[in-house]
Length: 61
Image (tube, rainbow, N blue to C red):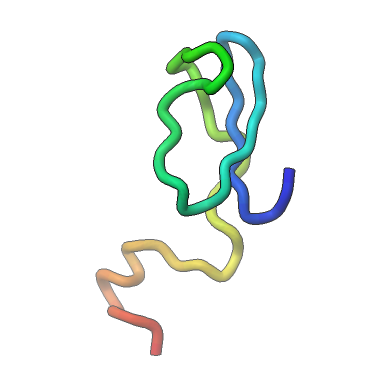
């Protein structure tokens, strides 16, 4: 899987796939349609700050 992608795995059929960041929420497996999926990689790439940082400090200075 490449950098800048979210990795998912379906626990119903075992299918694994990757989705680029910024494409929205993944709700079900594209192969079998099951909702039993889990994200396998940790989080956004290093260097990005989450919404909590923006709420407290505003934009980057």
